[in-house]
Image (cartoon, rainbow, N blue to C red; front, side, top):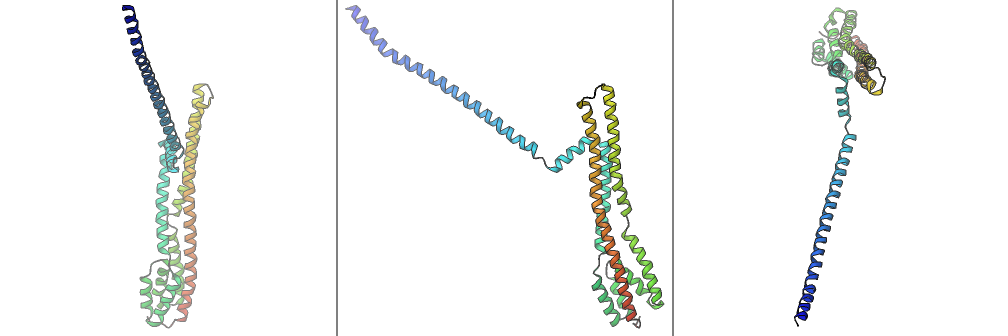
Length: 275
């Protein structure tokens, strides 16, 4: 009887305990699988973040603006040779801006000015025409004023004064253009000089290293060529503006000559105008 009771108790214990054991094993396995899944998920998220960060950094490196690239290359060129080239650019641009403003202010509507001078000359005489020229900006009006100021001395004197003062005004229009041409020539010269010095330094490095490997040559060659690049850039910028200034001066001079001829015709028609 005791054996039967003991067997039944053992059977009940096994019956009740085995599912609990299996459930515990399943729970542990589930916990382990969840932890592994979490680790895999975290690893995937880290890899995704790394890929996103790499994807973010790669375009940043590739999409640098032209200004940033230019600034970096300028720094790599070294201050010893880049500073004089930059100085040429600053001074040259300053002179160009001054000339652009001056020449634009010197531009005059000559047709309108001639009509005003003629109408005032016919209506109110020389003094009124001189007042019109005095209140008008530009070299053409200044030439007309000089001619009217010598009107009483005869048309021959008026013509000579217009020619003489026209030469003076032409010289004023061409002021500082020679300095701009100096900086146009000087900037690439400084660049070439920096290139030659850099080449000499590169060959000195090769001689010291006793090897002609690319790592020895590349650094000095790159710095040497950067000076030439920036010197040429400065020269190109100043040359374009200089050509604009020259064409502007020629346009104003041609206008002055044509207006002077028309002005003399007006004086001949109104040679009896009152002073």
